[in-house]
Length: 116
Image (tube, rainbow, N blue to C red; front, side):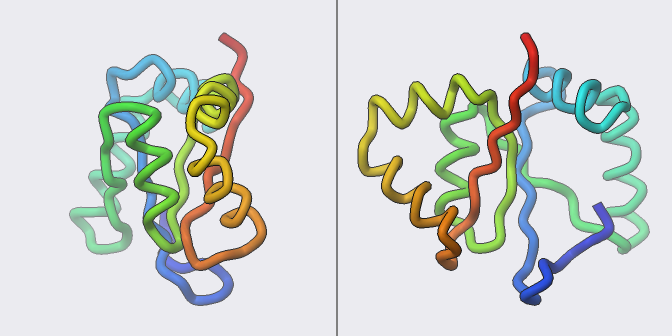
């Protein structure tokens, strides 16, 4: 949360789902080992102190993917099953995501396997 730039000096842009979203709860608890309200407090403290930048909140996993794909240096999280569904329904996005993973200037979709 305090890291503002990637190793190549590009700006990090974080996209997250709303605090009440089920996946956000899973991500905070299982990957970050904290409760969502604790994560919000940390973000608020860093943002208001000028030491960090608040994440951009998007409403759905699909919006998150689009935001990450279209934003250089972006990062976000989704269910792995969501990526599979989106890839099978939209072949253009699949190509974009593969390009991102190969190091284009667009954001990278990071898929996290979280047990339901």
